[in-house]
Length: 196
Image (cartoon, rainbow, N blue to C red; front, side, top):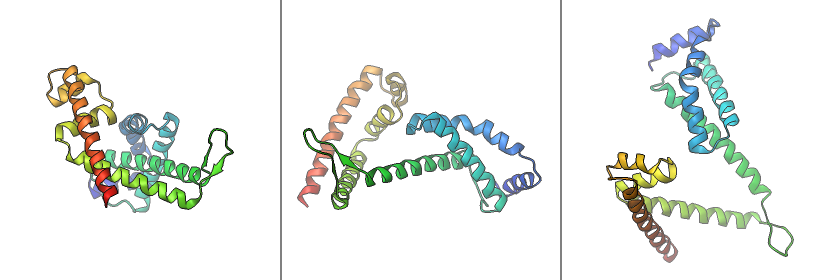
């Protein structure tokens, strides 16, 4: 999207013409809301609220001149929606961590001290980093299949078409082999990490 286009939108908004916002709603609401719901497990009501907030923020940034250049409005809006959702989740997690309690059978509830929580966070960070390293070592086909199955939730027949495999059963077999290799690589990386 060119600077001229943003200037045109800015002038429309300054003149009280909100028709460009209606176009943004029409063209991008379904894509953004459905992806938040499907890919990020955002409740639909929250996704709708986030989309409206992002459109209003977009309007404010255009009017104020803070948004000077934009190459793809859909990507900008969806990325803003995703970031807003992630921020909400992080705030909820932060609040939950402050009040984190663990119940054990036959014991009273105990609160985890902040130092123990930092150690748990560090362990999780190491696990995530080593898992990513292991994932990067998989073949491109394995990465695609794992992504399609576990992240995108595509049906096996669709994955077969996308990957060039013969049928859904071939996808299942390949997925099993890829996951076996992936788990092995993760264990290897974690063992290497613990030896250091």
